Image: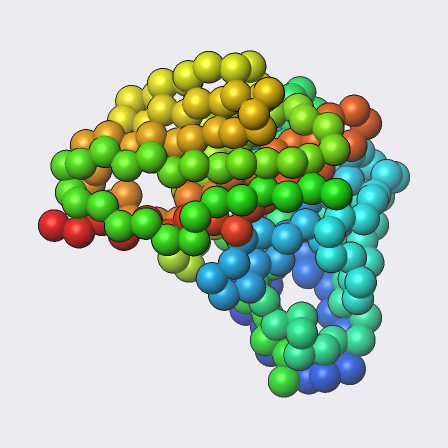
Amino acid sequence: NAGVTQTPKFRILKIGQSMTLQCTQDMNHNYMYWYRQDPGMGLKLIYYSVGAGITDKGEVPNGYNVSRSTTEDFPLRLELAAPSQTSVYFCASSYRDRGTEAFFGQGTRLTVV
Amino acid sequence: GQNIDQPTEMTATEGAIVQINCTYQTSGFNGLFWYQQHAGEAPTFLSYNVLDGLEEKGRFSSFLSRSKGYSYLLLKELQMKDSASYLCAVRRGGSQGNLIFGKGTKLSVKP
């Protein structure tokens, strides 16, 4: 029972490099989310998706892109990495029904140097 | 706009009771969640409220007042393992399913 799987767990990027953070869930959840969490802070919503083919911006979308071609996958793309993107990134998913909680992946710790 | 406020830090004694408050102002409301997050780990679900009142789940209870935009998480019989951050989150309503989090409250439980 895998749940929400994120890869990689750790990554160091140089300024200006690009990368994709992968997120896969096997619970057939409609909703998927990407959050970033800076030290000592709460979670900031980057992008979310309410179903395959549908994505929308959250609170802090600048510098990121997403796609949702399947129900299972929701990759997050960083095009030109900047030091301000150093953070821990969490992917989460949930059912559409309002009473259901979100399940989180284990996070990706990204450092941009 | 939207805003979710929680105290930054709290300290309590093992065996005691602690109440963590959360106030929110969001465009649309479709439920309030509490999550626990230990340092270096992912958040895990604790409780959910969508109607006014108290929800009890073992040592944890959560209360909601929609008219006041207010919730609290009550932790009883505190244990050392309860030292963690507690995150309040609101799911917006309508076609927007996004889940917005507060900054979290870091709880330290002391012997």
